[in-house]
Image (tube, rainbow, N blue to C red):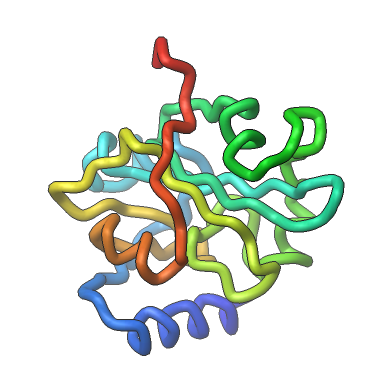
Length: 160
């Protein structure tokens, strides 16, 4: 899986944009990151991987504590809510070549649709997975959107 990390870094360098890789103790959850790492909690992104039953994959990135509204995500993909399913850790490793707790919105495999919630900070850099639990990518959201071909849309319940 280190090969995937190295390939993501190479892709980031190739496609341009400023970024930084942070090395740290392994972090497996948003709570781990909040408790063990020095990144601002409001700028931490988690990327959740899904499959569409009719074919294809989705990566959805939201702020760490936020919960994805599956209906909104399905609608963005032109699918029904019942047709999107969260990937298991084994499926994440198989499809994207990374550990479940270090999913990156920058995918090398699987050709996923990539979505970022509109509440993700845009004025400062964000911190997200890059394929290893002991590394974090720091980058501007606009660069992530350009590199991934992603879209910024509402992904949360309106009450969130």
